[in-house]
Length: 409
Image (cartoon, rainbow, N blue to C red; front, side, top):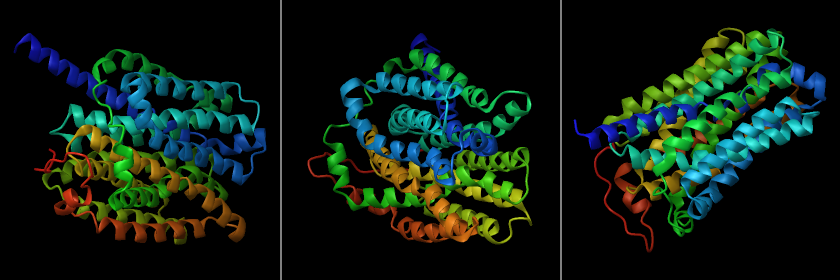
């Protein structure tokens, strides 16, 4: 093997390692508060609406940030933007060590959400540029580590609190993996500056109905994720479960997400038509939400796990589907950023809607039924994602297009 090919192989493995490191940092700050909410509520006096804001605000910022991230990439470059975003994520987690009240805790969630917004917008384009023949597999790895990070956050918090750490200190420990990702990124991300979106791409993409369909489907499904992260542990705590046991359910959900996010894109790689697999993820979520709503005590781990598997697989396959629509990394990356941006704005309403339904009905069951309705609407959008029509759906005025061939890996 030549020195040049050895160097190329080293860079590829280094980027794969970075995919794992960055992915694992993108969800712990959202998943961590749920299992220790009784401690947080006792200390800060946060209401159910305030608790929902811990998830709602960063999701909104992740949505808005995805729209403006392409412009930031053009101005400052992908590498500088990624490093700044990781620094914000690290700072938001570290500041939780000294938050005096609920409002400042929500502010730290906002800092984390801003950092994650840029990372999620930029990273799929990097994946498509670096691994053009393995997009489904690498996207599955990326999505799987995102979900595994959520499991880490959910499971680690009760363990740290039981070990004697105050809840603020427990949450602040999540800055450590962010520091590691930042240090590694400073070296590995030295040559990703070429992955920049076209300045006019966002406007062109927003003129296409398909962009809005991708946003809607992504948002309706991920509203279920945001609600599960915010309310699954409190739901079972209200049924008499301990903090440790309810955090175990969140961890089960997140680990099933991780396995599904890794496995389903790999299984779906043989055909560019992702719809059968997307529908399978909706069925899994529907089973989980139905069980949570009507049979919560019969098989709680199964309901959490099957719902998590559907959510994780859907997240990964949605990114793959968006990347499939356009051949060039900067185009596909911009489309994926917009899908996540509009989608997260929709998804942010999930936990808040459940809080409102809880205030009206006195329980969480109505919220889980609401998500069954969201899945039915998402299925109608999935029907439209015929790969034979991608070129027509994404034909952009003034943007040179090439035919989409093969299955992208």
